[in-house]
Length: 453
Image 1 (tube, one colour):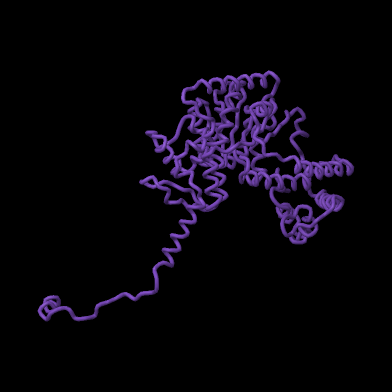
Image 2 (tube, rainbow, N blue to C red):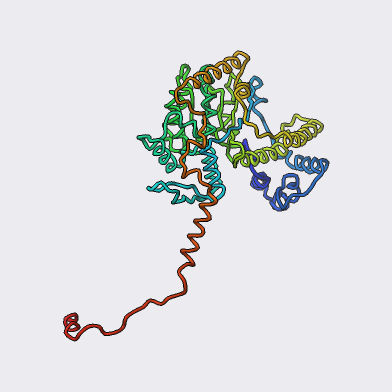
């Protein structure tokens, strides 16, 4: 007997591995299993063009094979009064600083830094470009050298940027800066999930700047402290507004029903990690509707990550959810549900947009009632009015004119110059030359005797 909430997370062979563990005599070969059932889910060179009837037939055959071995129970079947969970993807723009850094990393795999003379030299080559692009999308201050140079450019006494610069540097932080004050005023409590602990440290600086009370839990939190943190957040009159958690360390096994808003700051490649994180709030015992806000930077690698996650969830929907392995559904119900999923997949592909939502649309996403929606709109008007009256008013995101000149240079020119210099270093030494050694006896007899002694 195997108990799991995620029998299929990424690929079909994961499901075969569970079946093989239970019944190795029946499910012997993973290759054969894939040949039978993988066609509707294959990608790249393995992909076979199937019409809707063929896809339906293969998936229903897979359901028929799985039915004797799989029994599924959902929360909504056990707890009929569980409130709804609604998820929104909020698309965020990049600041000029993020765009410049993203372009450098995408073009050359390097970030340009400044030397002591104010020149653009010493490019910082970084491994794993996709990871670096994700860090830029989250917050450019995850690169300490860039933050230090900006502090020097702005004539700050500290080597750490604080205050409004924390949200002006990152499109995601700027969106959070508009959302979190509204949730706090309306007594909603937040679980905020991040993938990277270094980002969580920047987030703590931002919370301190905004006077938000928070708790933090990540992989370095000791086991005895975890229980104390949960108890503090779950107290009846708890003052803590935000629980900041890393997705991998805080996404499993925690009961945090006191929160009714979940923010996924950066998505995981494995969508089930994010689903598990959401369910820290959306579980038996929750009395409020749960809103899940997933932040995504437009025109970036995060769109690819989200697309990969959607593909994996789509496979799970077809194989596991559409099978309705609950001993209650009829064949006709299962067929209709599967057809609905296949139809929905085509419609979603046509409706993709890259527009960044304005204040009103975001307010519609986070408001639970008409009164809250009106309150949020009023707060936006007051914020804009207050910002307009500020002396030396600055835009909410860094603009190109604010950045130092060395940072905004075209990375292609610098890369070409770097390649030319490397070529000169490697091949510009001319023809081979032997080391010249003088073998002539230049010492006098007296000098030679003295050196021997």
